[in-house]
Length: 402
Image (cartoon, rainbow, N blue to C red):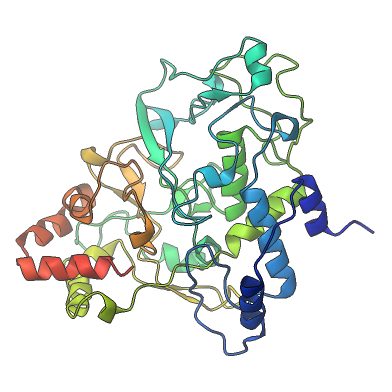
């Protein structure tokens, strides 16, 4: 009989998580609640209604998410950060962050090249001591790159619920030829294998597991069963002794715990409208009237046959999870299914908790974000500019509740 996976993971990270009595009491209360409460929580909290086993796995996965990884456990030889939480810690573990990651691609003749042959689309500037002693250095931008962007990490709250939105509900909103004539022509992102990609700023990942395993390799140089070999450093092969950990460096159980931790993160609770101002309702209506919901779809319902407690939940996502051409001002890298000017609609759920409001950090205020909308969103941006001061203020107050 195999050992308990949670205990094994705790031994692997050499640190037992510490949980307050109050937190444990709250988790037990949620697990025993039979009234099926809304899925909201404070930032970083687990979904309400978890079983004792789910809570234990969430706790163990969170400890792994917040643990420094050494070269002996798989870090490097090139990397960006030593722990997942370095990029996802604002305002709590699992949130967004302020660190920037340099991403690069080549766009030529309408085709996207992720530059795998010269090290991939994530430039890793840091190196382990082992690799440095062997003469290794961090990556540089290769000459083949045509587009670069400094990306900030997205918030991960509620992504387990996003994964459980039925594909048909997402695909029903596609309108690649703008048949309704509203100027919006969203289409689904697809992975290289053709799967619906609902994650990633460029619509690149189909599942939470895909996201986790890709991030482990790209951000920390950690190999998994899905990515069993280290990336080259700007296309140069690694010295034999540069990476002492045997591949795959994270086994199935470590990956499973990270996936469970993220899948069980609750979406952040929105503010009550009356805590912000009496005109929030008008702001909500204005958001809809000027066409913002053409892309920022207010709500989805998760699949009825999803695992508990992810099933049948109303999720105020404010995203259609589709790709839209946002014009030259949004130009960045490409992906297998997105041109440099196409981006997946950013979910506005939890917006007020983000210190940086756009994926590339180019806007510092909500007003900057709205006024910077171009391409398919140009009509809504223009409509916003014609609003009275009162209605603009109401709309911004509504957004501040999300």
